[in-house]
Amino acid sequence: MKISNLIRSFIPTLIVAALLSGCGTNSPYDSIERRGKDLAADTMVRNLSVDSLYVDGAMTSLSGHWILRDSLLYFFDTYSVGLKAFSLDGRFLYERIKEGRGPDEMLSPAWNVALDGENGNFIVHGNENELSSIDRHYAVRQITQNWGISILPEFGKEDWANLYQHPNPAVPQMYEYNFVCDRIVVHGNRIVIPVITEHVSYNGYENNTRDFWRNSRIFISFDMDDMQGTCKIFGRYPPVYRHSNIPVFAAYDFAVAGDEIYVTFAADPKIYVLDMDGKPLYSFGKASDRISGRYPTTHSFSQYEDEYDKALVKYGYYSRLFVSGDTVLRTCRTDDGDWILQHYINSDYAGSFRTGLPLEILGKIGDCYYAFARMDVENERFVFVKFKI
Image (cartoon, rainbow, N blue to C red; front, side, top):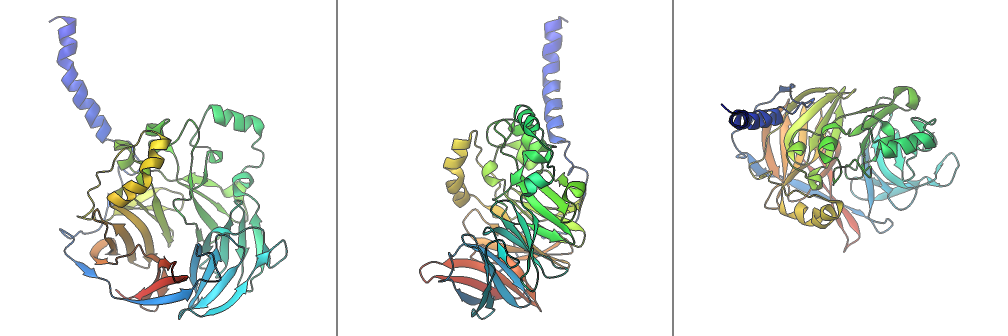
């Protein structure tokens, strides 16, 4: 046999081998345990019975973050410093925190807020990347001016220049706060922040995309009292993002329960569970029969911008996550534009509910869940719902 014919005879084998190696993704999620029992189909879909609650938003910008604490609703405005407290029947109660540098003042509005479940403090991520703690007496303690600098203050001009020329996904300075995730979480003394890199030559839009989806990290965490000594960068995108370039559907959400981090991704029906160091432990989760997962690819940042709004209306995806005890709730948008709430108990799928709206579950009081539903701009008010499962 001629050499050329010999090579030609090996081509099909090489193609098969390449496809097989592509299926073996070498992902940290590949070998983890798959838990939970799934029903055969979305047959247990019921309408969610809710009671609506209304909060007057006339004194706000109608943009901000809500925290449920001690049977009160607290609002942190995106465009002005301070917090406002409301009762669960919608009555305005009081306002605290002003702009400034005093013990009950802050320098900038909140990008995001988390509740410290151990002591009830609010942990505020300001719009200058500063982190502050607000205790129950509304005394403000600044944790750091800018966490991006504080985790490694000796990172100098030469280091930045080298990182610009040689992007490295293992370096924390590659990353910034991930606005699309729109959440921070506090666990004990530890803060977990969603991050993304949009390095000019290493990103999920048009440059080094394959390596980006394989190796870029999604979380930074550190202890509030020792940022440099405890900083960790961890978490990866699951293999579904390596099959096609779909940054429009790269959003993820997460929650911490016990010593585990639950993570859900827009394009992946699985819910992944990590330890606090980011090691994948197991996964569970049911693919909705009404989400096809056939997402359009984009190949440039301009194409991503052009397609973003249209694609999110046309295609279904997995959205927000809430964990309480052995209960996990996940909101999903279906391909036909409906919103459902998946219910899991101890990793087992227990059915779904039609919500009609993309609920942001804030917490549970007794056997009732409370969730932010939407802004009623015409009437300048916020709409919440209360429901039982």
